[in-house]
Length: 249
Length: 305
Image 1: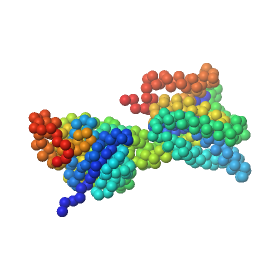
Image 2 (image 1 turned 60 degrees about the vertical axis):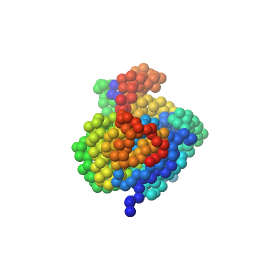
Image 3 (image 1 turned 120 degrees about the vertical axis):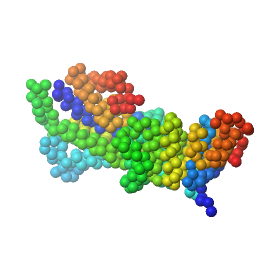
Image 4 (image 1 turned 120 degrees about the horizontal axis):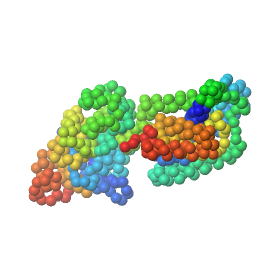
């Protein structure tokens, strides 16, 4: 018997203004222990979808289930206690706090024993241990992204959601960050990420979905999507055989 | 020369304590609270009423603690005023500002003008317009340096008390913000409220703490203003512009910026009283403010990028 899904998004509608949904009737299922990528063009509603899941964008209808529990209208600051950690795209570390203070604050908020929660994170990100006294504002883009992921892992979440973790990073740094996300997945944490960098995302993810106009259009394994002519036409610069189909596969 | 410095530091202490609370409101609650000055006035009068009540029932509390002009009654009154002013600030948020938070900063600013008018006139109605003093005892300034040395230096024991307690309060607040979870949460929320939420920080808890701490500091500043000058129902509004000048000068959200800003405003006022006349004291503070902002547009301790 297969394990129940970690995250189920059912017919979700969400947006900042009432009556103007950005996410429209989105449905997704994320399985335990996988890396799931949400792809799509600019303005497709990818970030809004994960922000709605994380409680940062108001949901007008539909449901979000985390390990079977309904978390649809759980306030954003309670999500971490539900086992969901979110890493925003930009401004994802507290630049006025040191590296150590960023991590210690995250540990103190969830009342995790300081050493027990920090030691595994420092083991996974040894650079952060070396730079722990440095103000987070002085870190490079890649190091900040590592700190943001480390900060999110402190609460030992079951699901880690990242909004465009490769944004603004060089290909070398993207490789390093994605390498860490594989380690996170291998440590048993399910990863859901939004990505613009389709090629890199499909190289990392186990499965992916393409979102267009706030609704998922293509869902499948990364291998399937890499071989899909519509994806090739839209994102990889190869010849298209047919336009993007309506509805999930 | 030294006397200008000493007087400036004493005025600056009052301004600094008030400015810290205002700066915290500005950076965490995210609006310019024009009723913050009234919290200083209310704090000063609440301490006066509490001290009067205590010394009436227990005469021993009225006896001055040498070498100061005030007794244990005022210190107890100060503690009570801190608690009551903090509750007043929290009540103001719960009754007024919390309901308007979604309407935006401009609505909150206008509401704070209304709250300031209401609070000031309530104070006037309750306590009357006659200036009051915490003590009838006349204090003689102690000569620390003779006139022959840089014009001399004379300071009253009460003024030394104000300076020492300001230093103690600011250091305590610094340690709280630096090392406690709630303090770090407040710094985190001031910088990035969205990230603070996803980290698990309850924004309402941080807002409550901000109002309470701002109220306590306002009460201390109000009592110090009453102790070094006098109590008047208008003392809050008279201090409001120097408070804003100090916050902007130091950089919004910076505790040490507010302290330094307060001291600079105090020094500018003190120097203008001696050098160009008391009527120009507010103008002098703002001239310094403009000069510093031309060099550092986000204040001395504000993020410059």
